[in-house]
Image (cartoon, rainbow, N blue to C red; front, side, top):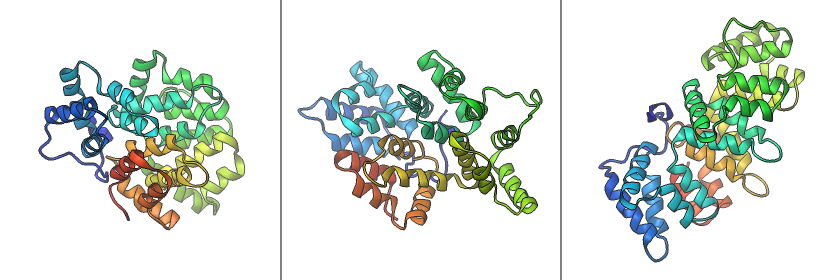
Length: 304
């Protein structure tokens, strides 16, 4: 089950000599004692893969009669709590929750919607769609439809693998042609398309999108182009923005660190250094504190 969420460039690998019942017992003691033993919680949960953490959670429930995520919620607080709960959540469920949060309340967090829908594979999107429906009894497509509009909505729905059946639709406007090409091709196909586009028009596709489009639709199509060219670089830029300036964007920071920790966080780290001139590790160190900082640094996996 976990395979589609695992890559070769992650910072977290399977823990050798893994024993879920031993880990579950250690976590029980860490939570049940006088005062929480955060150090034990952090060292276990950041040194196991998500698949291993889910086995620990299963053992924990058998041992304590309670869900591990509920006990973590009850025992921890702030950004540290959100990060630790994310670590014991199945990836598709985590993304479904992030999408729900992005569309909740006043205003939509378009950046988070764009990031998730452009960086997940179609197989992952199927799992996320299923997890979304299970959790909220609403289809992801219906939620996107009611929270967004226009070309932006159309493109998001296509990315969510919901709306489009090949050959059924005939595209009219130029916006539709952009959407058609960018949302319905694989990344390797897109790279070739961009090269060909440059040869024909003597212009980069990004410049054309910036010149022709605007708003969230422009942001979305630029995100697709950047992901097709280099997904780790796109995510490194998102992290850079999350850590830069006044106040940290923990919503984005937690999501990228957790969701890419077993896929391509090593590559994201390299791209972050290239972009900013300093390491992701040092950026996290100077921008966060306490147990939250310690956990993020463990997930980051090292200084560059």
